[in-house]
Length: 324
Image (tube, rainbow, N blue to C red; front, side, top):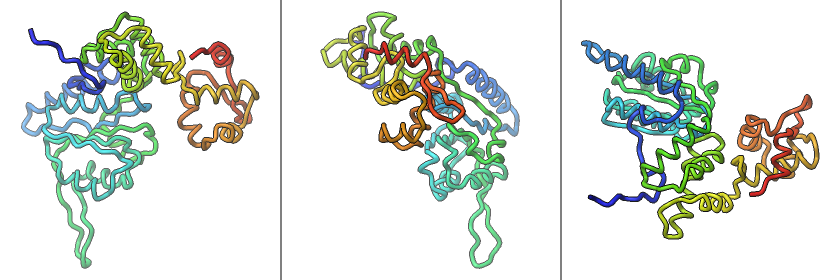
């Protein structure tokens, strides 16, 4: 019997089917129906295409993972992955011109594309318009029937016309604890990382801010690093506690910066955002987009009528009793 290979990196694993996706049941049900309809259409003389699809939701909730699973389900030969924040107009045109009916184009953070009109024209007219030269009529190049998948955390930064061209609109949400436990279990089994007990999985999931990316890339990986650094192959609950001690992550998944934010409110009462920014030495925009979203969502802070930040009783209790 061959000896099992123990992976060293949490990302040495690939999901190739929507049936293997844990959680996001509404999303997977929606996509499976559209996939089934697409495969039925391929029996016709003039089959349609899958999508285009827009995957919307918070960062780290599995949009890219689902996009790759769709690509695998379609059995397309080529996957072109790019990011709207780094995509230039010329690169987008090059990608569209090189795509075939066996190509999946996946654009992450699509709202940040410099010119959404190019993609809008490609979807609505299936052509690319080339610049005019010497007052000649503009030239067009027809496009193949490629598959387009896009993901974004800010859907309303997309043009209305482009957003409305999306035939599939899949909205991702933060995960329930039991789904995260299943995700961590699935990945640990695939990597042959043994765990001492169910409590190990629960603790890793609890401190992930309801997102698989944090549960796997940070939490599970660090726990395995603690275990393997001692020459062992079973993650114990003591390894988990040591991992989070080293990461300085508490039972709510908050790091030191987030706790310092809460302590400012705890010590000073309702506080203007600019004062918090000065005390933390962090720009206000960073505080609003990075720190506050999860704290507001989990009812750890709130805003009063003057938009001053206030700590909630839940966070008060946590700060008083927190022991990382």
